[in-house]
Amino acid sequence: ETGVTQTPRHLVMGMTNKKSLKCEQHLGHNAMYWYKQSAKKPLELMFVYSLEERVENNSVPSRFSPECPNSSHLFLHLHTLQPEDSALYLCASSQAMGQQGFAYEQYFGPGTRLTVT
Amino acid sequence: DAKTTQPTSMDCAEGRAANLPCNHSTISGNEYVYWYRQIHSQGPQYIIHGLKNNETNEMASLIITEDRKSSTLILPHATLRDTAVYYCIVPTTDSWGKLQFGAGTQVVVTP
Image 1 (cartoon, rainbow over the protein chains, first blue to last red):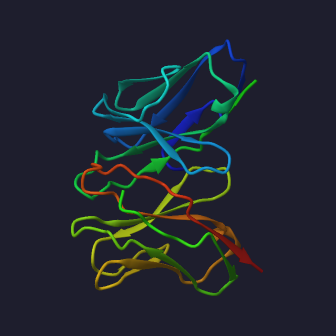
Image 2: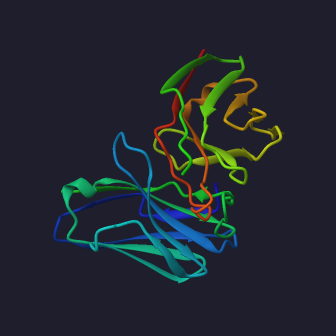
């Protein structure tokens, strides 16, 4: 148990569906992250939120829409996905954003295994 | 991120020490070295980090060379549960602490 939970753990959706992934952290952290891990590929950072404000969007297609309503919750809204979007989606949190070569320890959730059919 | 180079894979016998190397020859003076691991189909787990001095915690030891161009993560007594992909990461000065994961080293601990 890392203090970061993700739901659902598994999701199968069609290309025309709309679904949302939820992440919740119980650590009192101020920064939250979404990562994507495709099969046999390294983790890719998608979005970063600091104090509920998006500070990073790594050229992610608009069919992925993040939302951070408060410092404990992070959502990833999905719509009209493609089969190549099938991947493990990981949420993480840290005490704060790092600075100049220093990163706060990131705590990861168990991930949501997404399959797009 | 400062480019890190790690071996693709390593085998280690259970109960023996596992020494995982990482090269980061372009590291700058204020950039830390971080190690995470990812057990199959789970989220990554923080292990340890350091700047200049060697560091030790309950999971591992981190040895950083004097010129800081390379480091070694040491798992003192490897167990089967240490089988995982190990990532060496150096957040660059302009990355504001964001982690960029590479391919890492697949460590397999065998009985």
